[in-house]
Image (cartoon, rainbow, N blue to C red; front, top):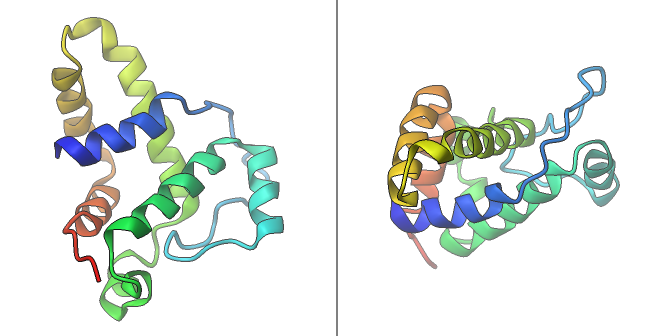
Length: 138
């Protein structure tokens, strides 16, 4: 869990905590697909967190086979996971880190604590990330 947590945390710590306008439907496509550039730019204008989600999504491609996101098994298991879900996850992770930082002397202990909370609240995202980091390079 060390490497992936450090990498994900680095994306999260500097994340923006803008509030999503609940009346606007953004981030509603599967994380297994990319929005078109116009759509993504619209999302980022509304909530800059989507820029971080985009970075993480691109980053994930470094750890999987070329067809990973198109595989039937992956589509079936994670096809409902959206960009919005990942944005919410990142925001919550950053919030928990910030709110609990004063309670821990070591970053490792803090991330372990936050990870344990996130496993309960976002199990599908944890499973998705674990699947990606099985390191099946092509």
